[in-house]
Figure 1 (cartoon, rainbow, N blue to C red):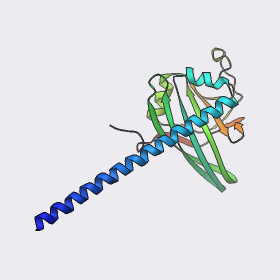
Figure 2: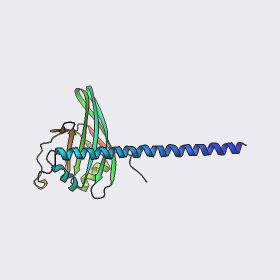
Figure 3: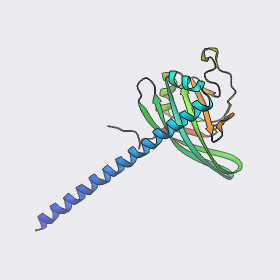
Figure 4: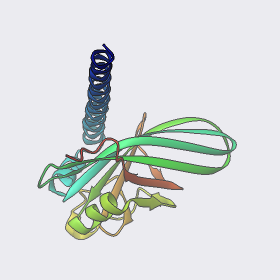
Length: 193
């Protein structure tokens, strides 16, 4: 009788563990789907606000899209967000997260979206594999190089081979801010199998 009870309890435990694992993977897939949808919505908004950006994104080695919510209370603030980096050649996705720390007087909630465009594999791989930290402000009116032909209008050059668009509810931001922002892989959402 004890053996029979032990087998029943063991089977119930195994079934429950398998069910929890399936639920966890289902939640992760739902989150990945939501991030993909956010990225597509953001790109559509960018292309409407800055039509040349569509060709720039499509011709680039890759791109990354993030959604961020920041909160600032009195002397400090923080923000976090999720996003995805996509290699145009392979269509491989890397799900990522961002964390932002701000100092300075203020109060409120700020939501914005960011699109990075990578000119080459080195810039893209460095961003995805090593993480990236952004520590300053950039003027969106930064001049584009002649070979870009104005296709990066509205974007700021934030690093060698990396361009950044920042969108608010009102459109493409004139001044791009990224003080204290760190981007890194989201190990929970990236499939390892």
